[in-house]
Image (cartoon, rainbow, N blue to C red; front, side, top):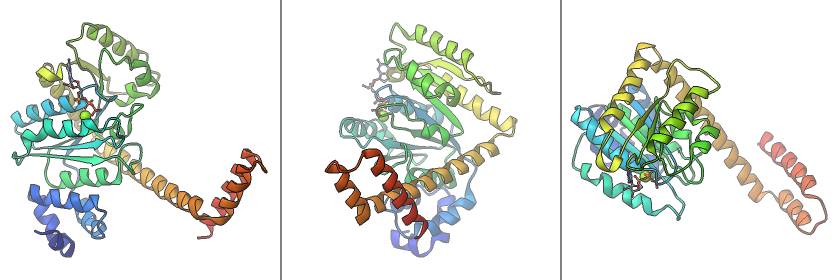
Length: 327
Ligand SMILES: Nc1nc2c(ncn2[C@@H]2O[C@H](COP(=O)(O)OP(=O)(O)OP(=O)(O)O)[C@@H](O)[C@H]2O)c(=O)[nH]1
Ligand SMILES: [Mg+2]
């Protein structure tokens, strides 16, 4: 089906998608990225075919080895006969922009494998690293019958936890050299990560890091039914990858046995609504801020030092709230 045919007949397109057609998944995701006007209609059908995929989010600071690890995890899942979708949220910052190309090259070997789907997204316009496009694409891959969907989040600057909130299973990736354990604890990642990976275990400090993480897990303030698991890997050599996938599967099994898959879905839906409402509000306010003549006047006054910054903030906030209320 061509792009036009998808737009003209979304029901037929989604029927084809649900039969496992990779090409149509790819086309729908391109339409999503372009924010095509047919997308709300297409998504309405997609949403009727959801709930089968296991979504696994990977979070960790840049360079910790997420892409390398995901590359290995794809291989392990393929050897278990699973269809795997991968969505990488690219850092849009020019600093880490080089990694994007690396990700694509590393995962390119799967381009011809019909059972593996890999796509990168720009995180520009993203809400904390997970954009509307990513969320919709997860749904498209679910509807297309991918058993597992791996999401690589950006970790630019600080740890990004959003991919974990939109996952059934959260994998937090650390390295013995990154010294980011404090950051991880601060971000509450021990809570969010169901599996904590200490990658780059070829480093002699790996065992120490594992000890620290296990200690952090023991000390965590809130208890949950699932005790986070810690594992060492050497992604570049594939060491520990089978065990990692075993743990991810163990967590999925735990969710199924405790009837928690539905709860996850509910959490993800709530999270999605929250993200979109915030996105709408921020764009509304930003638009008003940028174009409102009264705001401009106050900014000029504060610039000239005629009124205080605090006064300006109050006045502008009032103006924006009023304008939005009376739209
Ligand atoms: N020594 C060692 N190097 C590794 C290991 N895993 C990954 N690397 C290397 O670490 C570098 C970064 O790996 P990536 O997989 O790109 O890391 P990433 O977390 O995806 O990075 P960003 O996408 O930029 O956030 C690459 O040069 C990898 O070859 C490992 O287990 N041991
Ligand atoms: Mg990467």
